[in-house]
Image (cartoon, rainbow, N blue to C red; front, side, top):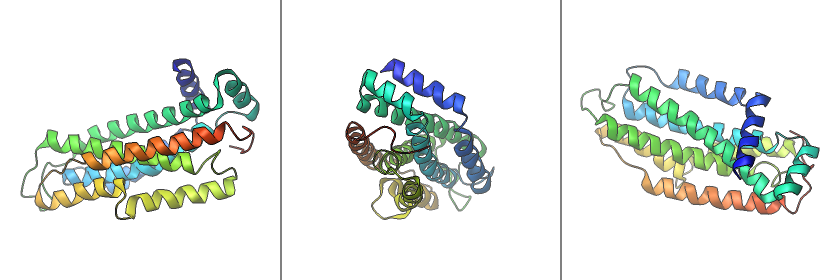
Length: 228
C-alpha cells in the first residue's frame, strides 16, 4: 500500500492538476478571511471552503491515470486497493492544505467573539477549528468518492453532481460539515468554543462507507469508463 500511495502522490504532483483547487481555496480564503476578524468565524470559513476542494481533489486523483495505466495497476494490486490509494492521497492532500490554512488563519485572526469584546482561548479555538477542518475534508472526500468514477462514469453528470452534493453537504441541517461550521460561527457570538467531536465521527463514518462503496464498484467496472 505504501508504494501505491507514493505512486499516486507522485502522479498528482507531476500532473499539476492539484493547482486549480489549491488556487480556488486561496481565493476563497482571500475573499472570506481577513486579518483581525474574529477567530472562530474565520476558522469556520476556512473549514467550509475546504469541503468542495477535497471533493475536487478526489475526482482528480481517481481520474489522473490513463485507462491503460489504471488497468495495469489494478491488475497488479487489485482494483479496490488501487482506488483506495487514490482517495487516501486526495484526502491527505486536503488535510495538509486545511491544516496549513487553519494555522495561518489562527495566527492572523483576533481571538475574540463576534462582538470584538469577549476573548476566546486561542489553542482551544484552534483545536476546534482543526477538527472542523478534518470534518469537512472527510465529508468532501465522501462527496468526491460518490460523484466520480466508478460511481458516476459520465463527466457531464459527475461534475454537476459533485457541485450540488458539496453545496448540500455545507447547508443541509444535520450534515456533519454544517454542524461543525455552524458550531464555530455560533460559538463566536457567545465567545464559546464548541468542539465538533460528533460531526467528526459522523464524517469519518460517511467517508469510510462512501470509499468502500466506490472501491467495491471499481472491481466490477471497466477502468476505462471515464475520461479525466
